Image 1: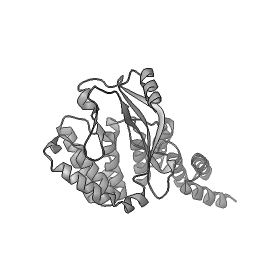
Image 2: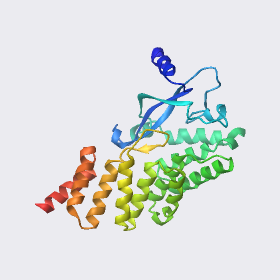
Image 3: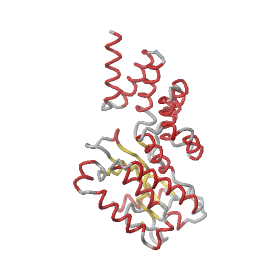
Image 4: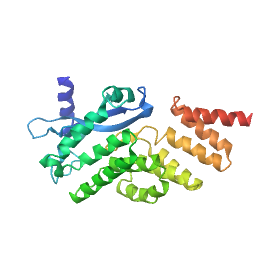
Amino acid sequence: MISIYTGCFKRHKASVLSLHLVNYIGETPNEDEAFHIAHPRFFRNHIGLKFKYAIHETLNIDDIFLDRDTTDLLGMIPLKLFHRGYMEPITIQKNKFARNMTLLQQEASAPAATSNPWIEYHIASEYYRVHQYDKAFEYVNLSIVRFIQSGKMPPSMLYKLKYAILFNTGSIDGAWPGIEKAIALYPDYVDLHFYKGVICYLKGWYAAAIDVFRHCIESGEMTGQHLTLRGTGSFHAYYYLGLCWEKLGNDQEAINAYEKAYGLSPTYTLAGEALNRLNEIET
């Protein structure tokens, strides 16, 4: 282990190295039903880097490299870390909602809480996970405001959570046209473009939705700073392309899209069911 870390830092000028973190969700481990992100895990000693916060620990990169361009300071290594802590059986068994909320509320009442706008985001995430969407929406918006008040750009995952909440509450009109502003802030975040495509589809703007989903596929999915749901730049986008083509009466294009979605993710039952349904109609 030590030789791997030493070798990595010798090959990089970076002070911090991230790896590919796979956050499993749902009932069983499935990388196609997981969130992916580059997560900083290795860093140089003796330059003040350390993890902070009592829960959802964060490396203090911004504190150490204040007002510096971190492009050359951060690197990536080809390792994966699989996280099962938020799969449904584990969260139920360990009663993580109660545990996490207790820790977050304790941290929120601490004197240093005013300098940590992440607290509200994590509270919002906890409420979202237990389907308390009204409270989740309140806290994610509060977190966005607190980041702005502190002079920092709200991280992209805050906007992802905000629009996920709106989707789950059926607030499509509430998501449009605000999603355009989020995309303007993070134009390389494929999940936000995917959300825009779904909004267009639900509003009946099928031709516009097709353009957006094609953009998602062209963009693909890179494991980087954005928390990305697997499939938003591949099989999920192809599936929604199929739905759009069906609405436009072009079953053959729909079949082609569903085949690509199912080929990319054979566990993607929605695409498989849609493909079987259309093939039965064709025969």
